[in-house]
Structures are given as structure tokens and as C-alpha cells.
Length: 82
Length: 276
Image 1 (cartoon, rainbow over the protein chains, first blue to last red):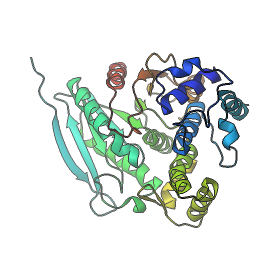
Image 2 (cartoon, rainbow over the protein chains, first blue to last red; image 1 turned 90 degrees about the vertical axis):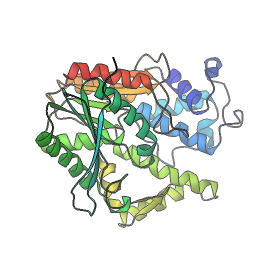
Image 3 (cartoon, one colour; image 1 turned 180 degrees about the horizontal axis):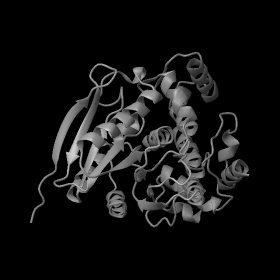
């Protein structure tokens, strides 16, 4: 399973980025850098991570730092899948 | 040559609550069989209405009738959402099956969308019924879906400066105390929440009928989501004849505007061909 590819496709879909995530790398900043990534969008991303990867995110597992960069989201997903 | 328009019949299947269960039968002329459709949860049901109507019309042109049943307390059925229970919903599905078996010619196919797939899995495990299964964007885990539904409330309250975690905690403890919780205009009763929370998309080992699971994703996506792939692999190793496919389209059960995916209907027609 390609976690990075899946995470980028989720970000692309939730934020309607039209394929721009193809240029994203693990260091690409998210929260604060993408204007459309507000709290509702974050909920959308969390829901989609859950459905696509098949885990459940508990309320105390995530905070702002989870969505700091592409890499931090990937690390979170890999942690959940481990 | 123009195909004859499918005939639509609406009726109420009597049930324990006043008004009964609303059913809509889209009849194919000289049908091969009938699909029994079980709808998604809460707002997702409304968002998917148009898509399901379009699919039922197309299926009718291919020789398949569709029986849609509104679950107790949903859509045009009797009762309020707050009076429903997961158990009553499984009974609704069972009653639809019994009615279709007695009244409709040809074979029956079970068609479940989102949490409708979970209800069907519970029905199949509890009754031993076996029929070809068509699943649209199935929810794999009921607890996950409940969490997401409650998160709608948390997100709404987050906007009003309550923190999300305490909003979620409050909702869960109300349910535990046997009280309904208001989420996005729905009074969610504990009898629905508890059933949903423990539901999972498991099929009996060696389930004797074919299963097709379809997901909507971005155009050109090669495989279904990792979560569905794991499930399908598990079914295959349990001796179940299952196929999963990702087709292009948007998440029409969630989008703000009413959307449709013709690719999903096309893929469903191909699935029906393998069921006949």
C-alpha cells in the first residue's frame, strides 16, 4: 500500500486541488499554508483517512501538529496502521 | 425503438409503527429478477436519492426491477428517526425480502449502499438468506460511521467555541445513559447508535452467492481503497466469490450539490449481468 499516494489523493479531493498535490512532498506545509484547510476541511480529511485506511481516529489522538506537513499526516497514518 | 418506460408503484408495507414502511417498486417489463435496495444513513440517504432513482431506471431497461424500502423512521415511512432502532431496520430488510419472495417473479439481488451494506450483512448472518450482493461504497465498520456522524455535531460545536473532544464525550455519555442526541437535524436514538456501533461488514464463510463491491473514486484510480481491499481479500480467502472495482465519480452521498456517477451505474449493470 502506498500511504503517501493515498494521503495526497485525499487532500486533493477534500480541498479540490485539481491534481496540484502531485507537486507536494513530505515537507510541504499544510495547516496555515493551505487557506482552505479550515476545521471543517480537517474533519473531512480525518473522515476520509478513516474510511480509506479502515481505522478509527480517537478524539485525543490528533491535534494541530498532525496536520503540519504532508509527512506528519503520513507518519500518523503509518502509526495507526502499525 | 424506444424501450417501454418502467412502471413505478408506491405502497406501504405494514409494520409495527403507524404508517408502515414506504416502498417504491420500479418494475422492469418481463423481469429477470429484482434488486432490493437498502439506503444509507441519515442525510446520505437524501443525497443519494436521485442517483438511486437513475440506477433503478437503467436496471429496469436491462430487465431488473428494483424495490426500494424506506427504513422505519426514514424517508416516507411511518415513525420518526428517533423512534427507529437498528433491530427494526434489519426487520424492515427481512420483511422486504419476504414480500419480494412472495410477490415478485425471478431471482432476488440485495443492493446495499453505505450503512445499508452493514444492515444487509447483519440480515444475512442472522437469517441464513443468501442472494447475490451489490454493494455501493460500503461502510466497513459501524463504529467508524457512528464516530463520523457524532463528529458532525462536534464540528458544529467547535465553531461555537466548545472543544470537539468534550462535545464528542457529551454525545457518547448521553447515548450511554439511554438518551437521544441531536446531530445535524436528526434525533439519534441509542437503539440506532448501539446497533450501528457494533455492526461490521462480515459475511458468513463460504457465502454461496456472488458479491460485487463498487467504490467511487478519482478517475483512473487503479484499485479500491486499502480498507476495502483488505476486506475483499479476507472474503476471498473465506471462499467467497467477490469482485471489487473503483469507478470514476464524486462522493455523491456527501456532496453539497446533488451529484451522480454514470460510471457507477454502468459498473452495476455489468455486475447484474454476472448475477443473471
